[in-house]
Amino acid sequence: MKNKGLMIGCGIGAVLVVIIIGFVLWGVSIYNSLITLEEGVNQSWAQVESQYQRRADLVPNLVNTVKGVAEFERETFTAVTEARARVNQINFTPEMLENPNAFQQFQSAQGELSSALSRLLVTVENYPQLKANENFLQLQAQLEGTENRIAVERMKFNQAVQGYNTRIRRFPANFIAGITGFNQKQYFQAAEGADEVPRVEF
Image (cartoon, rainbow, N blue to C red; front, top):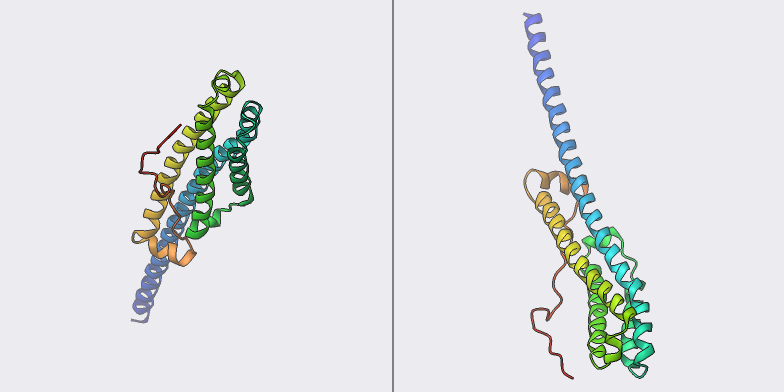
């Protein structure tokens, strides 16, 4: 009788150990998948940053090329230079992807640079000799290509964020995400007024 009771106790203990091991392995599996998704978001963000850096590197050459022809457009040059300086002052970290205010500040600075560059390119329309300048045309083509790359990388980033955010909010991963400190990431959103068609007047 004692042996039978001992065997039942051992059997229950073995079942409990198997359940605990299964639960731990399940938790580790979910945790590892969250790490993979978070690294995917970080990698996508690095691609966005890389394209922003490429754009920032093109700006001084573009400004100097235009300056040589349109010296009296100082206000436009100043706006571009100041916007680029504001962008470069923000030291973006992966933690800022979880901070709506910091992320908005970064987006706003990048939006100001985009706006200043647009004004610069509109200014060029008044200078036919500049539009024929080979250096300017090359820089303009590189800038346009970079803007397209930025748009593509932002889209990929938002897709990575969507996958990550969806995973950490769905049961049962939300349980593991809550315990281990995984937080939602911010999406890129269109700048205010981006849905309005810009007016260009000469």
